[in-house]
Image 1 (cartoon, rainbow, N blue to C red):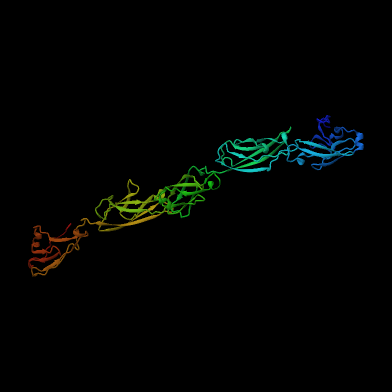
Image 2 (tube, rainbow, N blue to C red):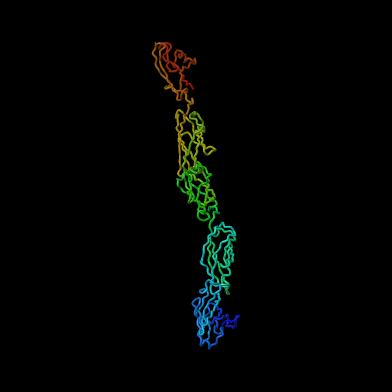
Length: 543
């Protein structure tokens, strides 16, 4: 039940199980000390007060022994028959001695007849009946990813109502490569856990770390309590926006209307908040002409047509796109977008006449070149391939040359100015696009005269009658010839053939106007001498 030791005034001891008692004597009072573990069962003996005071049972029958006061409502009673002090109700050390490392309960007892006052001090010994607890089951910390290794973060300590070796003795942190734990002994405040960064943090790799901090007391077996630690890594603008594609290429039809979508680029930033918010722009180094043709939505990265796209002006473009974040010190990345323009058949063929002879002699041989015809179409491919043609019922044709875009306009049959002296030729040029476009040009060709026709008399032979005794020098007759040629080739002069033959002697008495063909008799004729005669008139052109 306990132990009793004799004090300097008469101390003796006796063991009562695991309990111990100490008796101090004085003239009017005595003091006893016992110890007992908390949480013992109700009725457990603390010590034999009567025996420790040297009283026998007969004395107890004559003198009443009772408890008169205590520090607290005493959880003890005294058996009046044997003087044993016992536990009257379960004792929770942490309730009765919350603020003390040593728990002592003072009880004042009185033995009557004669009156004796005895003081009993009972030490309640701690047992490991409580687990360590944290004030919060979970805490949240915010740590910047730029924090240096070795940074320290003091954590709230766990509390254990038990004392001495049963209080918190150590802390444990579950395994994490970025953090380690250090425990500092702060004397009365106990052991304080300190979280230390041991490896650099990267929010983009792990934006949150979940740790479990465990407090362990010194019991055997030990009791534990834990707290969850949620660590949110605060972002630093340390990532450049990254485009989703290594290369952007797209085709675009020319003449696309303003607002037409060309392509949408996309870039992401692993940072958080404004550090990860991306906006887009066209490169500042691009020339103004391209900036007038294309636009980009700063929020979505959608590139649209802004101006007139003309394949014939330029068949491809390279746009420089910038993706920037909205951090305090923005980071920017660049990417090129290659745009290939697709031709649309929007240009009609152009016809140009070079080396043109507007007049050609009628005696030109078939195959004679009249003009060179050049055709051009600013479109490409089939849209720019041009075919030329002309009417087939004319003495001209188009002959291809070694150059696809040049044709020779040549004669394909003999010309005859006297039949047709002028031609209006229409040349057609048509591309092979779908739908095709065409153009035409008309040129005028004049056939120049060649003296290829002899003069012809209106009548041949001419017969006329002459009255005898005519007056010399007067007109007797006129002839008329024509020439189908033109200009000088058609100007006719007349003369009388004088070859000296007998039949033509009479012609010496005649004269002819070379321009008009009027014939004049130079003498008077006598019917009785000459009844008939003939002569030749020659008509000559001026070719």
